[in-house]
Length: 401
Image (cartoon, rainbow, N blue to C red; front, side):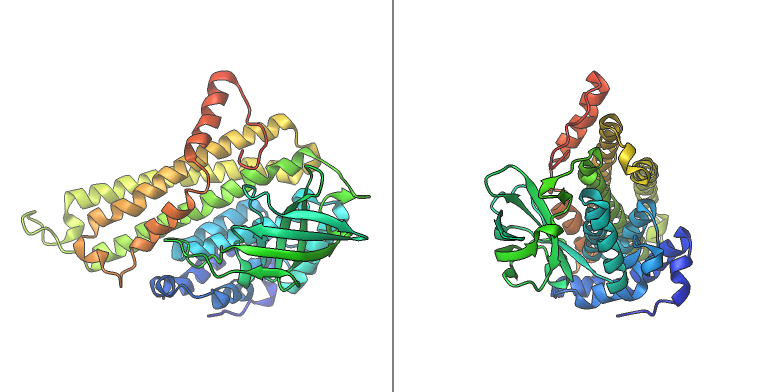
């Protein structure tokens, strides 16, 4: 499962990279349902992402990356997720953790990480779960030592490096650091057994004295953290990653269902039509769902462009600009959640009873969306929008807002 990357791909425009992602999706689509059922560790799938050049999409051109921005990254995630929601999530989280050095780190740190990641085609995982506060970071001379447990660690066994997060002992300061995924003391567990996103390697991880130099603590200089408003863009950025693979999964569900309807569905024997595609309710449903999807995709693209303006000038990001952006992200997250859930369950109304066969795998789209949309309650996203409309209140930066 691989494709060779032409040497000149690093100079290609955004549209070509989106097309490249569509090529990768076509490969993934050939056996997506079977791979979902098998639930095997997706080593081949991640190798495909590396071979295609998508892993280094955000990396600096001078070090072998594509030099693209978040606008392109979100579209690439969407394309890949059309074929396989799990691999779309893995790629999206990879982009996020690759960018985390720039989000939190000093210039020297993120320039080093981005250069090494692009040259080595690193695939990133992350042992970062803000609801778990049981990873303690202690000092041992010039080293930091991470000890504890995280319930989720997306990308675990397929990653080259892992972003760790913990609380510095005796303080309320969080510390982020990037370590090799085969570091001593870092143990990934095979306990991800959920109904959806089965190939994301999102099981738990134990950190038993994982060591890393103090110099790798992102954003720390002289053992003191250097805060910026830009540091708080983690939530709106990852929420747009979520939106991207939600919309990709929804689009993939519609495309797969439409193919099934055209080629396999039978018209209702009392409906008076020879073909399922001529049934009025079938035509109406596809039109309705497609219009809803297109509307949210357009909103997502607009919000991504707004966010890119903040990424382009990190030092100029203000609390006001950050807050207004988070409100817009909350709005598109809410709509993407609702539309993706609707599409992935209503496709069965226009494919018919036989489409529920396990071999067809149409249920994987709903299972994937239902599983991940429970990440954080969508009602709180709607509340962010409502408070801003009624009172002009901006969301306070937290792990979820």
